[in-house]
Length: 285
Ligand code: AVI
Image 1: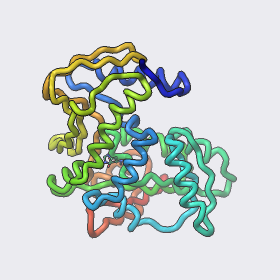
Image 2: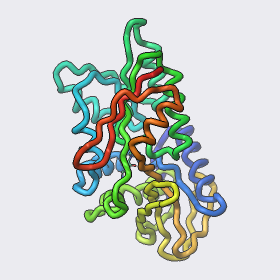
Image 3: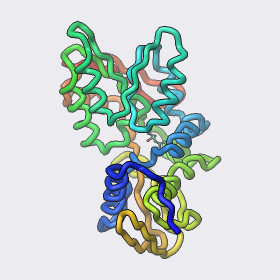
């Protein structure tokens, strides 16, 4: 008997439609990386941030200073954890927005007083999870919401040795593998699918042309999968992969170019000494 978790039907049908579209795509099959972050995925991502191989988060934190915070987050568990953690810090007032980023930012911007200036934080190199063109478009949309003189502090992971980058996305303890495989487990839980997780393996690749890490799930044998809530059946060949996430890596000067093309000027750039990662202070021009 199939048991589905009860979720709002709009959520299930959007998820099912994305899964169906991605898995039936000709050529490279794909699942959108935003679905990696359910409750389990968000907890695993927290664990990833503590891994010795994954230097991004510590680099980001080392470059950061105390600030007031309006967290915008689609994962309710991540938002609650953030409010709980930061709510205890003196002089930090927190109002959480459980919304997609740009919607939340619009709401914050609309609620401000005329004389208030906004400092927008987009940290942890989350921009890297968009492909380069979409990343620029995202910056452009942020710029449209801001007023001249507002600021955006943007975290961007920088290119480093391929070996180090691959280790960051294929850690020895297997946390990133669990994070990636949880996407299939989520499809099983929420869409009643029958992915056999023991027949897939996590793979991290460096794409030299696009300068990004790609996470894939490799089918270890020829196998069929049913996803009832998406009305989909897929046959996967042995060795075929499903592409689940990309993390673009940047050159420091490339970020300045992106800023200029999207209506910002780069006022400051701080690069961490232990892990090439840049905190970029962009001012809306
Ligand atoms: C959220 N994002 C910036 C992480 C990254 O590095 O692309 C997600 C992640 N995927 C695997 N490890 C971490």
